[in-house]
Image (cartoon, rainbow, N blue to C red; front, side, top):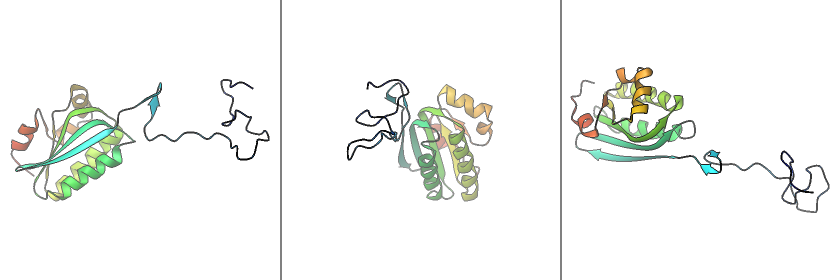
Length: 158
């Protein structure tokens, strides 16, 4: 029997309920780490950490969404807790997308930074990300700078 659209079979292309040769099992869905669209894996998230004299910089490259929020949360929390009364700059120059999951992490990071007396800042967000920060008013809570250098040089009022 040929494979037809919507037909579920196993590796031997047998109907799921049919008696199959020993060892043949029904096909199971493939578990993907990242979602695919038209056979192309969606971008992931890379976070690199750099210590400077005036603060800790987290360079975020990729997308912050439900699949990557835990990694972003962990990196932001680690940076904030290791810089008490210091400065943490989130370099968003290579951030292509942020959804509500990422915004939620930013709110948590802002609260944690206030508790630790850390200046949390965002640097170089692309226009689309900057617009999201403006529309959600996160840019009124977390200062946004054009460059990482400006964020590192800004006065600390925390």
